[in-house]
Image (cartoon, rainbow, N blue to C red):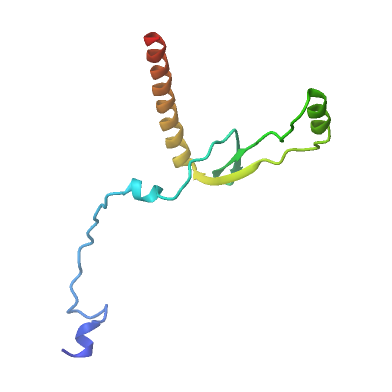
Length: 122
């Protein structure tokens, strides 16, 4: 086989046009989660960035203060600010944001209905 046979020119009339085949591959969601910790968040900020939304997830932990009520008061009175820990930032397109809102509303409704059924069992 000649070298020219391995790399035909695109404008060569002997090259046949090939049909593009799209193959859908399954997504292994479990494999993608390995090693990613689950974090608790008690603060979320949402910032518009052009035509997208930037979500930043934080946790604020109260400062440690031990002792009698007077000692705790004294320790906390010296605290000037609390720095939240940002552990994730996610930039979402408008389309993804809309779909996420739909999904969150549906899951929240599921949680509320589970809570009502659990209350009736008590």
